[in-house]
Amino acid sequence: MSLYDILIVLAIGAVAGWLAGIVMNSKGSLLRNIIIGIVGGFVGGYLFSLLKIDVNLTVGSINFGTVIVSAIGACIVIFVFNKLFK
Image 1 (cartoon, rainbow, N blue to C red):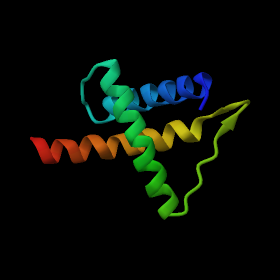
Image 2 (cartoon, helix red, strand yellow; image 1 turned 30 degrees about the vertical axis):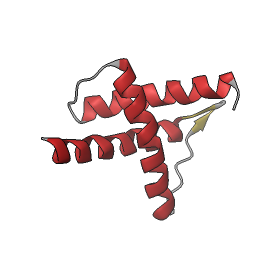
Image 3 (cartoon, one colour; image 1 turned 135 degrees about the vertical axis):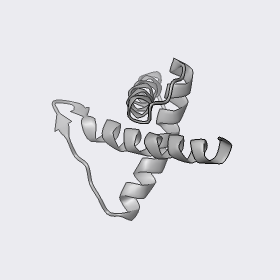
């Protein structure tokens, strides 16, 4: 994995975590958003593949489907975390 790939994963994670934080009314730091966004990417990707749903929203070279799936997964992560620890 190159440095470029790592930066892309971090950027998508940050955006997805930030979006999930807004939707779920959860506050957190940039680092927390990145972590939740990356974990949410795995969760969302797994769930969407189980349901055989393909979200392909590519505009130019940017795939917005990845951000949407990651944000949905991050919302699920936040929901489960809140239920377990509050």
